Length: 228
Image (cartoon, rainbow, N blue to C red; front, side, top):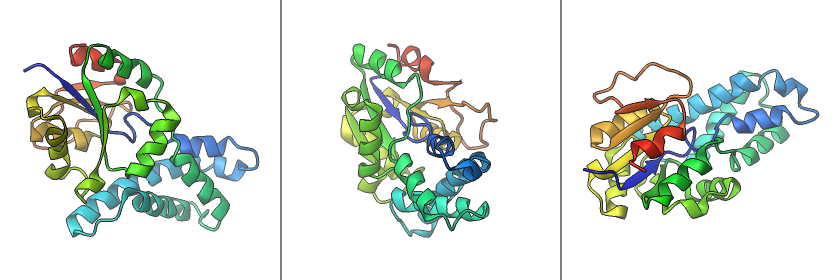
């Protein structure tokens, strides 16, 4: 069955989650933070994801903005920088306007040129996603933005992936699901989507019940996979 619908994870896939810490580290007066930023960015993302999984298992949902703040607070404390309220607020402000990866615009334009439906399916809140999309200038290249807040549970719950068929009326086999998160792609593949893992770091494939159909270094190969 041909691909009709291309669905993208947002954070780490379209938007560079390390950009907030990287930009803050380059600003005047943040020389101390500059020595810590790679570790903070790594821990921030790790804790952010861990808290989504744990909250889903515990049945204690909080929106992704709260989880993002909680992850940052852990990361700053781990580096002894939790007393800098101004730094915290700056990092959170930058996170709402993350840079998109360089190939995103060209890739989405190629998909829209041949008539594919395109959408984001994300843990992010509608407000977070709207801010990032406007900042990146990709709003007119997306048919919809689907947030887990509609179902009240984070990925990889099946209820999240159900949102795609409910919105686009497509069979699972018509969907190409794209994520930089190996666990997300594994879950989507198990669900029945065609999948592409954007493995920018060259990590091993996660040991999950299903594996990604394709592994790419970036998003440039997505139009070809989708038949564009």
